[in-house]
Length: 290
Length: 344
Image 1 (cartoon, rainbow over the protein chains, first blue to last red):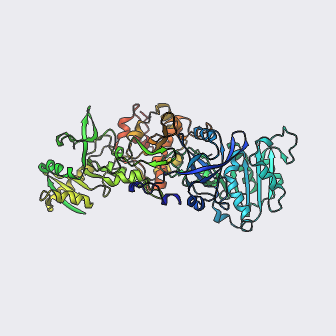
Image 2 (cartoon, each protein chain N blue to C red; image 1 turned 90 degrees about the vertical axis):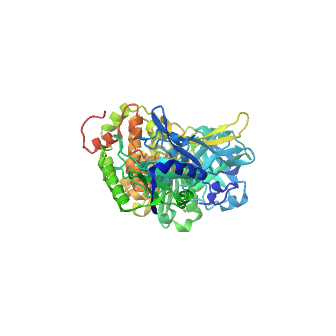
Image 3 (cartoon, rainbow over the protein chains, first blue to last red; image 1 turned 180 degrees about the horizontal axis):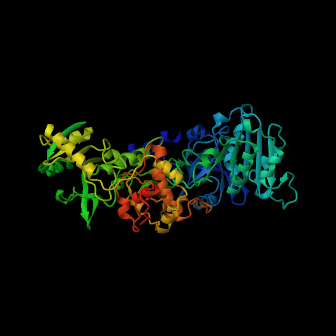
């Protein structure tokens, strides 16, 4: 935990306040897809900006002044510190308010929270990323972490599906990965109204036909809408993955992010503390998990 | 720990002395029920009360509080108003102290909740012995006795209160009264043990919590949950009166014409429709049945996995508060197959 060790307040009772948001500036906003923008943020205080560290898969609580807080996963890799990148879909009150903000407006950040991916366990293994739609947001942090530390991982495969080329998040960035020889980047769209899509067309699971995967030495990182879990998880099991080598990033309502407010509780786990990254083994043993 | 005794007729004198340690709050009768309230005079205190409507939780996690003030340009300023207020809660039952000890665990750990912790530090607790009524099952929940989490505890031993002194503050209170407290002798101890035994015999309600988490696992699909979902009004009363329910909601209030305002938290209930609703409209517990099941499951199963015991102390408040008479002890006993009567 980084952010609790200092607080602007002089009130001693609250000198260590895990609920304290720290102000950050919106450095840039990229419209990736309608209602899916990428926000680049930097803490106003240099010391925070340079010392903030997170694990791939962790999230922050984002405060939009005058509106409220929402949990948002960190899309940038800890290997590229200084700036936080959040891929935010406009869906609720806080995100709608965020979309009304402009470059140089300020927001509040506290965190990072959650367990993140078990990076230590992943070192030396093959990585298989399977994401649908907005599911790429939390996986991108691990993807770039692995690519920036390429020598620490074995084979890397990315399977990403979107409805159409126009709906593909981080499209240019991901397309630029297709030609790289140090990873297999498989991109698919359900349909291509543009007629100019040069990658795969079809539903995400069919990318398995094009991926070389050795389940015994691979960890799979999966994130997407429920339909992705439904089909991808089955395909992974069919391929011979054990349930503890399938990692999923889950979403729940959260008000605190630190295991107090009770909202993200599933079964006997808190998504914010024990997750948001769960193994499939954890997930099938927790009711209402997926 | 120090063990002393206080002559019963000196209790009011003791109460007048402890005022110097803070504002004295105690159970007071209100419309035939009891509430913890600031005393205007000692004679208002009703130490023979059965249970208060709201548990002492309201002092430590208020129904609504402001965490921050937001000021444009200055950011989120922590709001510490009232956190340092000295209060003495006089006459807290063992189950309610036990519940605070459970909340202590929730509001500490990797992330301390500084608002709760500050109040816990500044509010003294004087516990008092009680007798179970027909809704009490604290003994089943192993919360009929506490050994910490309070400053003083009074046990009725006839003409005296046997007094456990467990904190330095409690000791200061005792010392401030001069020679009021006396040493205990063998007959006092005998009297305490007799009283403890008779209290144990007085319980009429019993639930077994050993292997209950496992039974909950096995009975996840039991039809009882649908039956309860049909009955439950999702009013959340059980959560509000529960001494160990701690779910809260956070919302920002804005002053008109600006972005300035307050960040407030208030009690929430897992029975409310929006408890598991996420942005975009997905609700992980849409049906009432799934929500009431979740409440039971979290308290009797999930909490055990996380903290080693159920988040229930058997105070009986949820049983008395439920407008449709859902009875936790009945639900548990029925799940265990002890009684096969349908849920009343």
